[in-house]
Image 1 (tube, rainbow, N blue to C red):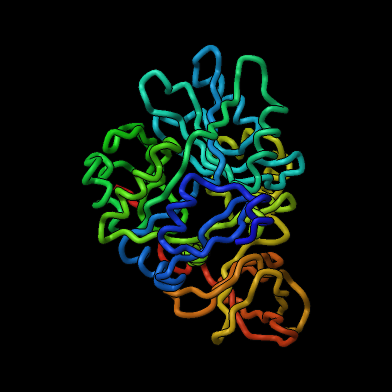
Image 2 (cartoon, rainbow, N blue to C red):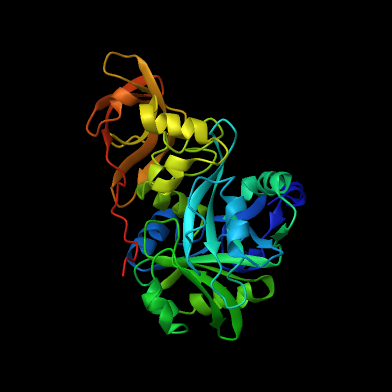
Length: 381
């Protein structure tokens, strides 16, 4: 890595840890991040599906929203003006996926929202936002912050994820209650003397956890988890192929400020009362598309053959007319072939529709497919 790149990018607290493991480091979202380790992207991907993979996601933004009156209802009511999910009904420790929308109903970022469960802090909301959007997200929040509510950005916290079917057994050796922690729930506790905020969530389609820990402790925690034979370090390459097989969106690719949650197939993340009542930025477009259906939809796409269809590939109908574009594409190791997602005009979104993809100037056959490509294995209890 050149000095020029290092001067322009930040490093997570695990940078030296990655280098010590032989990681290939690349600039990503303003940080030097591991794209792969000596194991290689393919084996890292399969290892996560079969065992347990450790991911550094410390580049993500972590922050708290806190009300002076120490009432959860106060901060929840504020956040509901900026996101379409039902924040007010969150129980202590419960987590939801949602989006920041602009006034036109486009997605500014997608994020996780958690009502803290720790005694004395159940009035506070913990958010995790994407690395490339975090500065804009914080400015957006602060622009709308009313008196009596504060945004506390936590630069002193790191974030790691342990994903895969063997992740629960590894974590349970330090935290037995993690075995029965429900999906999209969290707890604040201690692992080997270190404070952690652990949630049963992740972005691979597998069972697993995301763990927030102090910067000063994250190397110790990562080393502790890596001491288990079941655990391998996993880079950005496999992280991308895992989330693509799982049919999960990547901000800046499948989601952007022109795309609504309805077009993106994220209607499930907007609870019924919020769909009906609105009251959030962009609600007019969301409610209109719910009532009239959007003009385009995100779909899974299965190219025929072995050639992958990358982001930006034009999608055509069988008459050769442009009907959409690929937003994510690559090779699916568990599918043993190319997989992709993209947006097509609504009439072509039905599962099994034959389409063609313009790859290197040639039309290649493909068809739409129901997402995900690989079944999700989230723990449901």
